[in-house]
Image 1 (tube, rainbow, N blue to C red):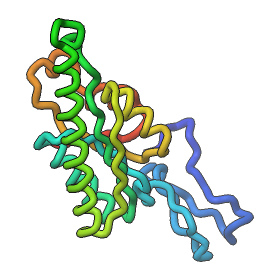
Image 2: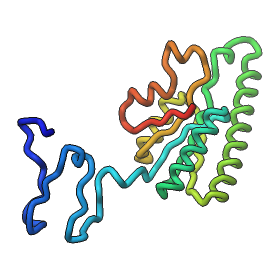
Image 3: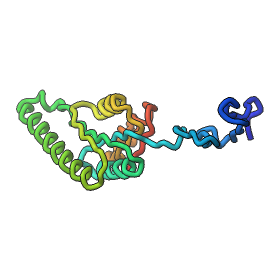
Image 4: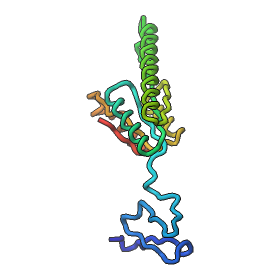
Length: 186
């Protein structure tokens, strides 16, 4: 039932020989025009660009597979982003420089392994996947890249860290940003 102050939406009579009323359920998708000129139908196009956060964890791998499967079905492209963590305060301690170098080498090795695996999956499934590796805060970098590529959807793995249940995880922060649909894969 329509709200008393709202009139039913109608196609302009100039495009059709008669007006086609829309029901409340049709507000999110437009009807197919009788003249066959239905080049765009809101709500049914699906994503064309999917950003997925990867970090080598099990939940991130599941998120990657989910994003690639979604992209394959929707004929979309995937941008897989690995955010190398920034150096911790341990770098300021005596001997900390060696620790920072070791952390950077480990992150670079993870990025190389992820790049190789993503290239294999891209070739095997015929999905356009771009891999990006950056340094910084995961939320800030994922948000920046999603804005740059005009992502239609963001997919991330659920956090396995207990503290994130209290403080908030990356997924929660992305959802609160409210710019894209965010899928959190367990």
